[in-house]
Length: 329
Ligand SMILES: NC(=O)c1ccc[n+]([C@@H]2O[C@H](COP(=O)([O-])OP(=O)(O)OC[C@H]3O[C@@H](n4cnc5c(N)ncnc54)[C@H](OP(=O)(O)O)[C@@H]3O)[C@@H](O)[C@H]2O)c1
Image (cartoon, rainbow, N blue to C red):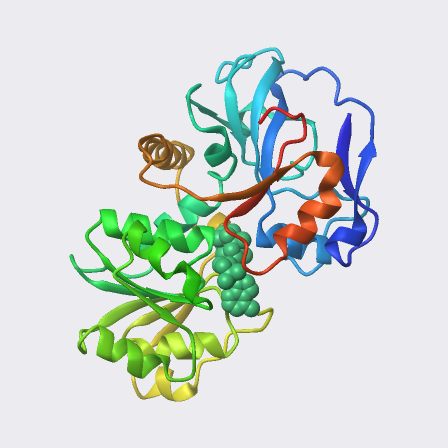
């Protein structure tokens, strides 16, 4: 079987190689084996390859924070899944053709779920959902401002906020996505820039904005903070600029703006296994209904991981890069 291995940390397309390796073998008691139908290349995976992500396991290492799989075999005493079931895996190392894990680490999905969307279900949809629910209590019709609004998370924030009756101000770095984001339900779309706070204030007629969601970091975080009402909160959940978030002390001290961070694992850990399963059930219902959707730019075979990684780091993509390691989508 084939899997992606890193023999060093560095430029992703140079360090990630598709290698032939021994089959995972039969599942032990309590384990489920699945073949991987598809995995996305997320910014965190790029950071993992570079060695800048919070997890940096000993080499050789296999990346891959999420995937969609189909169960091929289960060990003794496994009752939650059976061969043929579609699953998402809560464990890592998913850039491979086959994987086995403890059966409680997989979540079963309905057989008619969209495979591409399901491959991207584990991380970004709950991230968007929890960013809107767990940071600030937002009033009905309240405003939320976010940057990287054209990212998969950003688009999900737009759809989920719209569904909840919240209004969004969406900051992007290119004009060609304005119409698409408005079609998703974005109330306001603006280009980032030094005069952002003044343009935002005018766009919302001075109404208060209590939550700012930031995944650019650097000075962009300060611009989001400056758009908030006194006492508002900025939540940083990523760093597409590669910089640390910068907020002027005056925002924190004089205006009482607070700055916090989000990591999905930390927020899921506050919930029981049953609550987590219910959250995913709720989210895949929305996928099934088409209420949430992440566009796909291109799907590659596992042997083309180099091209896939280069594409995933190319600006101006129109959606996620997926890899289909067994050619199943
Ligand atoms: N903390 C968590 O638990 C968690 C969970 C999920 C995701 N995240 C983070 O969320 C962010 C988005 O992830 P995703 O999977 O939704 O991303 P994605 O779909 O791959 O999209 C990446 C986005 O980043 C934008 N971008 C790239 N470089 C940029 C820069 N220097 N300045 C401004 N924008 C830039 C791109 O803009 P264009 O469209 O213009 O190319 C694109 O919209 C990432 O930082 C990721 O690490 C965090």
